Image 1 (cartoon, rainbow, N blue to C red):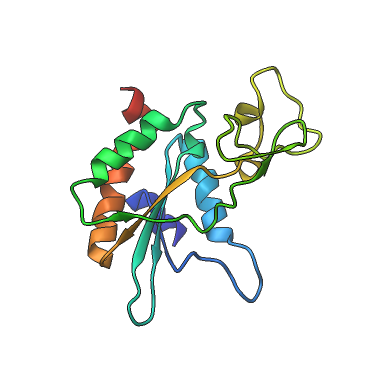
Image 2: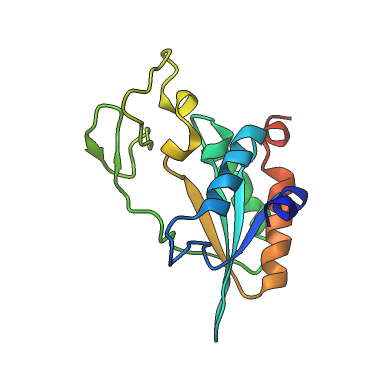
Length: 168
């Protein structure tokens, strides 16, 4: 699954990929670490299953490690506008996080990170210093009517959403 994702530049899992029996999401976590090292958005197709299921395409922008993710989000929104997709609620988002000082803040705060206790910084802040698993995802999620559409959207996003492609 991971090797196929590297070739396609996006991960596909049944549902969210969460392991109900053993907990966790190792494939998604490994994919996110790879995207972080490759300086590209972490794109994940969550395949629906069962009657009336829909697929979702999630784009995590934190793996770009840029302080302002809004330009990249706007590019992603422009790219998917030509497809039959609907933005949807990200059910992994709880609208709360812990700042570097340990205070709880709302979604609108600039710093949307969970820092690891004991992490040393060089003044650049936790976005650049913390391991990716310690940084809260900042994602857009799109619902698609069918699997073929989800794959098309993911493929187009994968081409455009690398740091190299975004900065030219």
